[in-house]
Amino acid sequence: MLWNKENKYIELPYERESELEDAVNEVKDALFGPTRIYLDDKKKIGKKGGTNNLPDGYLIDLTNSQDPNIFVVENDLSSHQHLKHIAVQILEFSLSFETSKVKVKNIIKEMLHKRKPEWSKCEEFAKKNGYENVDYLLESIIHKKDSFNALLIIDELGEELETVLISKFKFPVEVTTLKRFKNQNGEILYDFQPFLNEVTEDTEKVDISEIDTIVVPAREDGFKEVFLNENCWFAIRLNSSMIPKIKYIAAYQVAPISAITHIAEVKTIEQWKDTNKYILHFTEPAEKIKKVPLGNSKGKAPQSPRYSSRERIINANTLDSVF
Image (cartoon, rainbow, N blue to C red; front, side, top):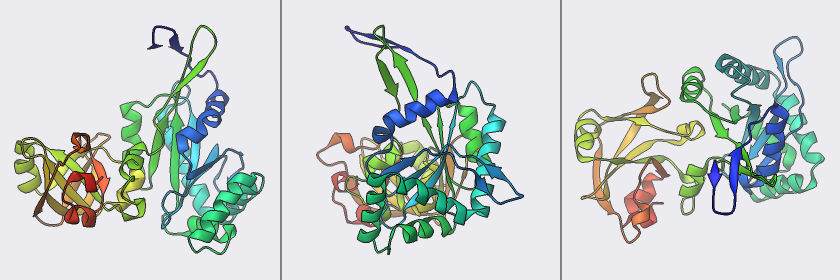
């Protein structure tokens, strides 16, 4: 329940998947932000005689000027779908995508043609970033190596499902939850975190194309025993689509030190035991660097993993310059 003195909002579960799809369209601008384009036309993809599927939509992500991406979108209700069904559906999307890239490109191009503002946004991005036209932009995104990304939009995400999505796939799968609430006057509220919100918060000063480092908060005992002695750091939550970008890990030692003090090159990133978290193994022992203290803004102290760049950390005087 959501409550204030004027109103009480009770959760209004989705009875049909189409209701969730309508909700996604209702909140898409706030959910995805100005640098992403959501296309919800349903068109079958896949090779003739092979695996064929009907995605619920596509999300064109133009946030990174150096590496734009496309996510294949699946909308599902946790109450209606078994974990196995969701996992199989996403796997089949990847197979269909890989075997029909020309078809996927033409489908997305056709959707954009029907939406002039979205087409103009892609056209502007293409001109600004060295692509000849929208067709060449889509060609470059879809035909690059490891181009498949999945986005699952669901009303409720259990830890078991999140763990399955981490353990079963080699490609990125992002998950966003979207709930709705209703008051006695029939007014609706939607509850969600903006897509890749953790990344967006950290790109106010750091261009997303520059990100190559994850900064983790560490207490003294764990820092010495694990970060320094075991050359790894574990039980970290990460956005799956950001994993390929992470080349380094930096340790922010909490109070009383309150500073980034060490950085290490990342050798591998793997699932941590049977959980929805990760373990990062270092290439070699962490390097001690010039301390990057908290600075004037206490709100900059990492409470959870944060994204930045090694170069920015090495050259920073305080955390105000890191995030």
